[in-house]
Length: 166
Image (cartoon, rainbow, N blue to C red; front, side, top):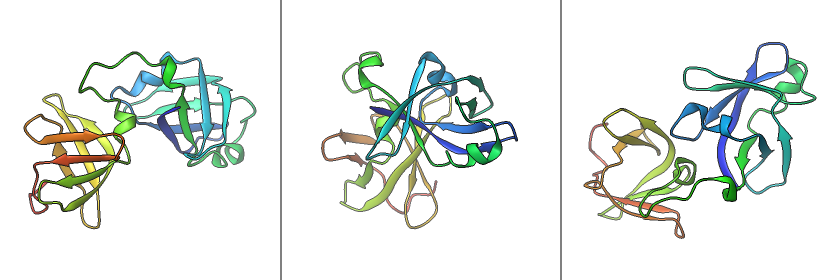
């Protein structure tokens, strides 16, 4: 499974939820008929989306059996995933945004800067939003900055000082 987003909150009173996508494009989840709801360590349950709309930076969706705000509130924090086999193949040195979320970010001096909390598309380049003990650190996802993405070790090595201003 590839985690593609999470249920951020209830949306309205008719069972809709607001979804924070973990993909480059807000509407990427619309390409998949079947979603899986669950937690990172499982279990996952297959669900079809009854209704879904792309909003500014989020999605609004309604799931079967979720007919009021109370039911929608119970879904808060649930992750949304799709089978990895349903995703298009990646080129070398390309990564799904969802795979980068949660990776530790370590600079060349060995300092742990934090964990990737989200990515931003700025037009010029994508930006890692690194969440650590202090304010968020914004790191451009450029070859001159990103040294190595090690999916097995779940780390990203960057040429970025801990005291650079975001």
